[in-house]
Length: 373
Image 1 (spheres, rainbow, N blue to C red):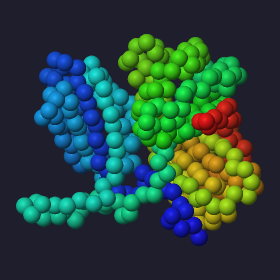
Image 2: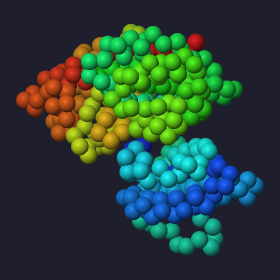
Image 3: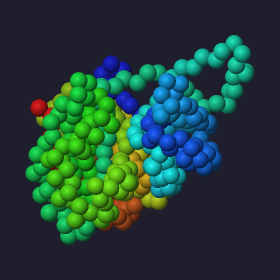
């Protein structure tokens, strides 16, 4: 069995209450416009399932600095909301008011009520049971589609770019970037030690990265203008593919670990359920430290789920485990959540046969995989 000290597990699916902290720096003279926008926005947010409360706070030292905190029953309803088109429309009025923002998400581990606090409400959502064991690395992904027929040109651009400097500042460093394609869909995963947003901003400013992004522009299905902050913000917000679960077993490698990405297009409205199923499957598989999967990360947005797998051997050695379908009826459950037609599959296969077909169809093409030196 893998012990706690050997297993790294970070998950949005533990059911614990979520605290979201948003730091904002306003443009001079924009306070009333910001307040009007927030007043409209807060009533919309309050109607979102899973939302509990929020607070708007202003710095007592710097009036241009504001803080919005919100509490949610758990991470999944918040993630579903913040990654939606409705969220983009809701926060759009804030863009002209805000110079800079930073967002943080925390699950609630402990809380202490004062002596004058109301009696505890036992209906409140659960607290996080135990501290998570991490590795100091933040994982994130971006995904976008390119015009059909341009895939080979896009792959060439993505495979031959000059890597930016790995060091961002004294505490932040780029660790690894992996680029995959599945048909005309591109997925870029990044691993950062330190501050993710600082790293992403650092990368965006590098001339070699800007050159690649400009070279990609003619091939993108969604138009963007990188010189227009609103256009760039909208594109990268829609492209964001957050990590919702990461697990590393640190078992005994049988051979060199190989990186794969599996693309799971979910049926409409089934993306979160699919991501949760894959996360639970990986947790169960981690009980065997000699198994195929050394580490896995599940990324999810809307009906797109991508699972990044570092494997100790060829995935087709154990297709059921490789696609996250080992166990009684798990392949059938997976098939009910996935849009098989989007992968060119039908529902005629079952069990290991279905897993093998799914593996062949979902395994993404690795374009480049770069570790920082």
